[in-house]
Image 1: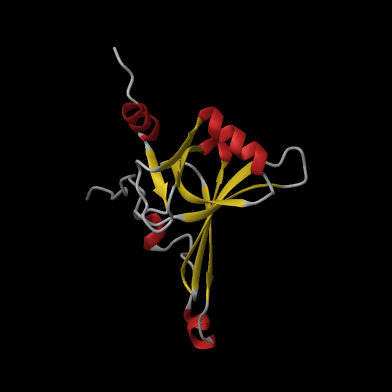
Image 2: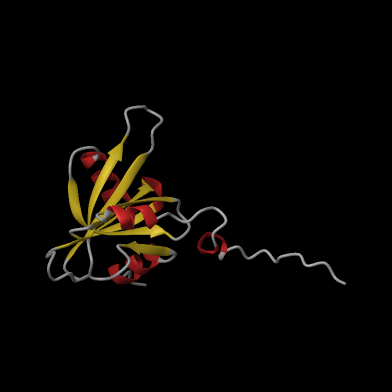
Length: 153
């Protein structure tokens, strides 16, 4: 039985989500760790969507399954570039922690915890009207699949 790199890549990516989520967008990927020995290593994808909007998504390193670094940032092609899995990814994380960044696409476990930070340029009036989803907002709770108990009459 022959092993094809394409099949292995698909298996490694199953159950993951791409960050940035729209192909062929790429992000600036950095590897960060705090000063305390117990601080986790974070892999951070920063995406500047416009001059007024930047998204920064942080994930624990163990939740990132793969990183794709395209050969060309302007013509992203999965056949032209470097796929970092397992040992290659661990080596990249170790060599670049708190040292620099690469440009590419992360593949993260679907249910991984993330921290999303947003920098948005807006007017004072827009800023006063903006608020993030609050704990009881429908936008937060619509994923709750528990049935609501309605007493029988």
